[in-house]
Length: 228
Image: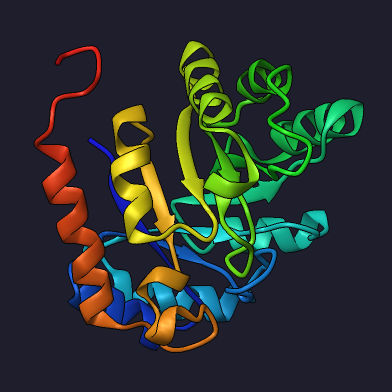
């Protein structure tokens, strides 16, 4: 079943999301544009709030090996690393996988600008990554505007063939739930849609979180296309 994930930048935001029923958090220092890592102490504060009530994955892009190891040591569920297209992406996946896959789950995040690089999905699996995300900046027009739905479906199918979990996020709105849920990703990630005034830089709005959760509940009871 597809889960609702909410992006948080502080322990207070984590507490607000959990109080509204969220059980999967993405910890990032930047919530509007490209994800950025929190410090290890900041991440530990979020983990302390989450306890056994929520899983926490954390942004980890642009860090050197020592800083990555520090984040991995916090007990976070997984680290999320942005991956470029082509040979540079393959090299990054192999390098990070060798150094960290034995100590923490790793997730490769792909931007939608050039379309999904399907060739990198089996590389991620071989390198020891456990999942892949297709993600756009929260302040953008959104993932569903940046990439065709057919390509999102192909990305999910390719990830499944490589036995990788799949997440979709970036500027998603409530109306996107009904469009994306039938594709059966492991999670849909939200920030703008669950923030005050739908502004990702504003505080989380518990009422909006519950509205998105209600959309999940409504669309989850509908049969998938192959079951109709």
